[in-house]
Length: 101
Picture 1 (cartoon, rainbow, N blue to C red):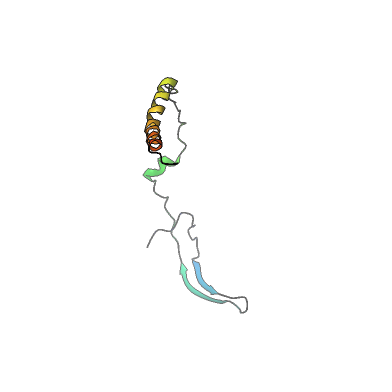
Picture 2: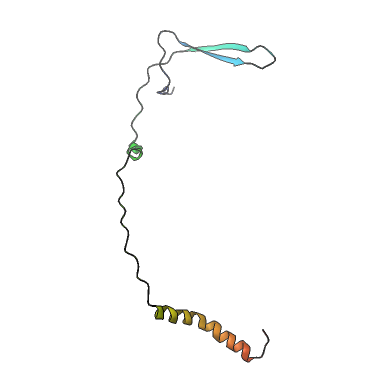
């Protein structure tokens, strides 16, 4: 049989009466005594190895990296033009074939 929970107090001199009570709003309840229970004194719960994670931890000091440098505007413009150049070539080829847009 398993140990009784820590929150359940042990029985002193007299055992506990365990009863089954069946009732409704229309009739008187039916009560049947099932057995008498005697609870031994419980032992303290074992200390979990995970318990250290549930205590107050020291404050974490955050360090942020320095702000990144922005590349030169001319370099950004060159790469933007390089990215858009296939579209410009495609648009030029479409216009040279005289296909209406």
